[in-house]
Length: 445
Picture 1: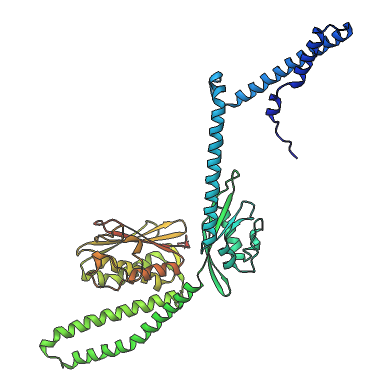
Picture 2: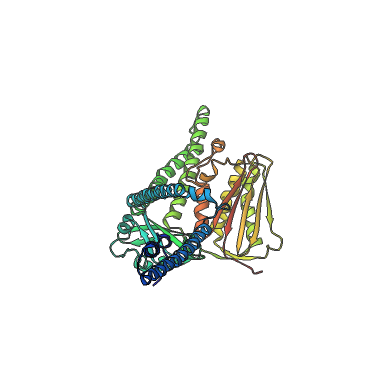
């Protein structure tokens, strides 16, 4: 147990005992009394004088220590006179700061108490430092939340424990947790420990996404069923249209209207195909069939498949594989990888000017293959880049070009399905580059 620091104020009290001895001794010496009593008075006065001298020495030492603790170069009489006023101002500042801190603490507690998002703060020792009522409600009664409790009492699932361990290592983690009847989305954010050198604390946020998940499932089922049901009448319209054309039952003045119906029908078929494909990806109905592929052979076959589309607009599709990668073997589903790249190349051809060039590059980055498609089109504005992969989104500059607005959304979902990601770089007037990062490239020839 540590001892309390010395109270220097006790060393600055008035020396009443030495003063009393000196005054009593002086009085005895001045009185007309027996020599023995006068001698006692002399000894008392001498003792008082010695004690006064020692007290003054202690006072000087104490004052020296106090002045040494003041971080100012000038420590003369002016400073001594200003100290009381400065001390009062310091007391007022301390009171003001204490009031502000208490008010801020009350605001923080009020915010935490009323947040719908659950918050759990984990210390460097893997113990719970803070939590709010929403966290207790979302995690349920099976989790024992309490300050000083181990994180295992709140997050017992192996996946959660692994992700929290990664977060303590400095990684931002996000995952979904099933706790019937709830579905919970968790995010773990690491930050440096405030009271120690090295190490991390982890802030865990929890959101109950059960309702959103149910709505998303309903949306996906509706889109899947609607696209499936619409294909039958659309197919009937197509057959009837072909019969009209082949049977010559349309007068010459009606042919422009018939062509307009045919174009609209083709756009509807393309839209239904894209919706159906996106629905299959989102619902997990689409299964990948990866197999070993040789980069050079796959790239050659892919370019042959997209050349007819490019020739219609007199656009050159130029392969640009990294030297030495033609014999590289990698694993992927050739149909889905071709579909992803075809959507990117078709967009590049569609939005690029005639007689332009589309470059298909492949670069090896460790165990990742980076497939890039670069066009010479109008580019994408900075305000549109964050939304470019949304369903049905089309930038204002491209709305005059036929399309469904689902091609890039399909690209994004296919990329995620293959364990990769897709990126875009663009500046208005300088074209765009879409890059698909495909993991698990094998360094074999």
